[in-house]
Image (cartoon, rainbow, N blue to C red; front, top):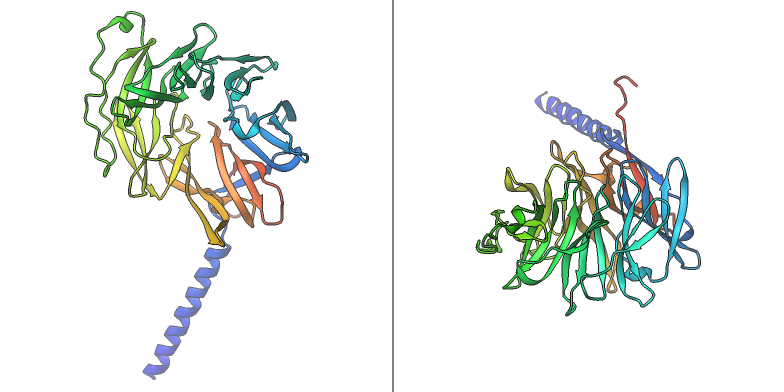
Length: 395
């Protein structure tokens, strides 16, 4: 009798377990994203780079013959080509602000890469250099200020800020030969990196200062010892006026790609790579200093920080190797929310059978642009991701 009761209990437990697994497998995720495929020019790849709060998307698209054009798309006016790129393999990113201005990098008639600004009417202005031949744009704010890096005499590159009144200004370094400005907010705060005199890369924030502040005696920059390579930096600050900007040293930048973003609230999101192969993601504000997020990956970088302090993470490339090649390689892409942490986006898309997927940019309305390829397609398509509102209970 006891044996029979035991078998009945085991059978009931098995049925319950199978039922629970079936429910989990068939239940829709509580957060889902509708995928809209952007139009293309018929070539292999359409790649959106940026999106503003008006839903305007800027990127590049290939034709069937291999020509590459810049495009602008939104739901109201559709897909428009802006200009052709003669040297697309060396083209940098594209950035669009809420005014509709576009900043980017393209080859001039001599083959030199130059930063430029395109206004909504199609008028293009080349932004020049700092005395060398090359420059590149890395960010644009709603006031039309552009930041990036440009060659100085001798071919080293320095961080720059450009505006229509002052032109291109050199933001300087912490004693080393190289610096780069990666992101600018509407208050004119800039985040990027610079080398110190011992050639170590430090993350820095450049803050605008008044003319009277600009003549103050500079503080001793770079005197803080860099943090150990075995732990994330502490974010101690130092300052020095430079071209109308005060430089705040956030400490050693780590190894690997030096990526960072800043939003209008002054929040900085940055990557810190370790020699052990681990990647940390960190935030910084003047009030809180540096904080390490509870998320560690083998690799990856942040992008698309918005005013809700949400940002995208492209992390952990996956795939399998055979005959020296990597197949089915794609990044694990997350949306980081300060309240709920990381959300693995691929598990929440309305499209199945995904072969390749990565994200590019996020706006303040939560819209995300990226690229996606399904197993039944021979094209890598640009996509717009929009959160689907949760269904009401009982529906």
